[in-house]
Image (cartoon, rainbow, N blue to C red; front, side, top):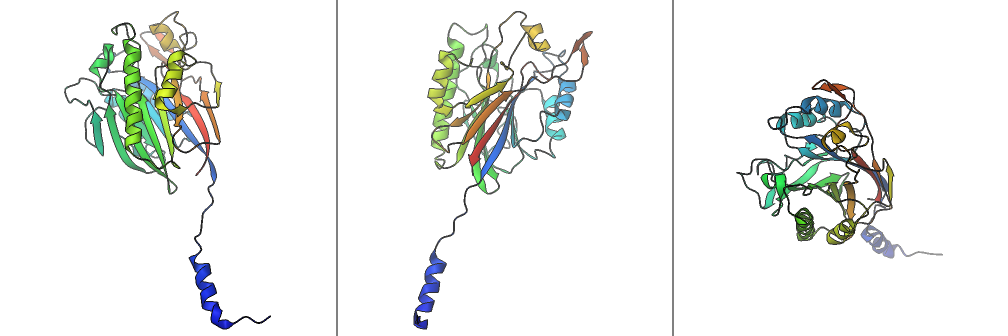
Length: 316
């Protein structure tokens, strides 16, 4: 068979015009949510915040994640210990939500420079952070009224692909709140978060993660309402310890709330409007610290909450 050489340039041009595609690769992301209980040392000087910060920074559970979302990083000194000690593993970090407007690409919501306490949320990342935004919740009650609580949003460059993470600490149950008020404040915050995500116009094929102490008990009507309000997916599997806040097994929680029932309050979720995942397992890590002594009492806790780790399998 003879081929006309006059057609060769056209054939080569056609081949050159065919677009090349890089197949998505299944990866497993590790996301850790950790409420560290770093209350102000001025108001609460007896909870070993700096000692616990040092132990957390040297612990095994804090290592080897893609993103770490920290809550209750209220006191700057123990929070700085965490930041500095983990800076080689997590070199990309946000400021603390609600501390100031410095270091953020934008601040929205009800930020006030006169509010006494910051919001306590910090995001640490193994991968470059390309956007940092903070939003301060409008509604609060009880002790949270004195805090710039809200959420941090980051866009992360994961090996050339964008992933998006929101870290938050929702309104706490508090005797200073009227009946139903805390739940109402949480609902308001989740609605604000959903509106914020929608406002970013994130492409539907990019992964969006929501993580933190959401202060909503798992398997309750409020939990179902939260997932609906956020339009979020829960993990397909929950394993590890049965609870994330447990006065029966945690010495700090047990001291503060003896006899109270255990609760599951801390989560990693994915956004239903964006990239779907292949697998999603959350583990409550019942970790114990080296012993330390507070007011002649021995403790073995990193915090009053147990951290949760989510392993997310996704095509990126």
